[in-house]
Picture 1 (cartoon, rainbow, N blue to C red):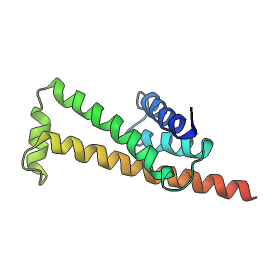
Picture 2 (spheres, helix red, strand yellow):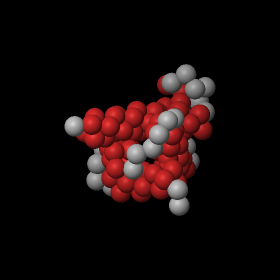
Picture 3 (spheres, rainbow, N blue to C red):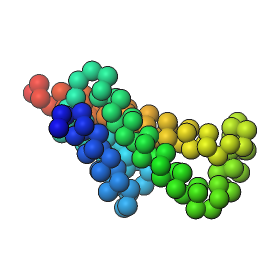
Length: 118
């Protein structure tokens, strides 16, 4: 397997494992560790953790919302300017999680580069 697939898979597995005992920011920790230990180059440093965590949070949010027939999701989507769409709320949730993970991965890569230079 190439390093991009490994990075994607490890980010997903770490995020899933950390989510059992850490709060929401555990996805950022997973992306940071993965980018620090399995470095990538270019845009893939941001894009792979963004996609991995967006997928993870999107599926997780859908499963949680589906358990209660999207009742809470519809109410929150009314409060936000989402026209009451629970699916749009799930999409926004996935994008926010992906952005947090992507930025954390960039930070992890920069820390790895900083420590390698010394």
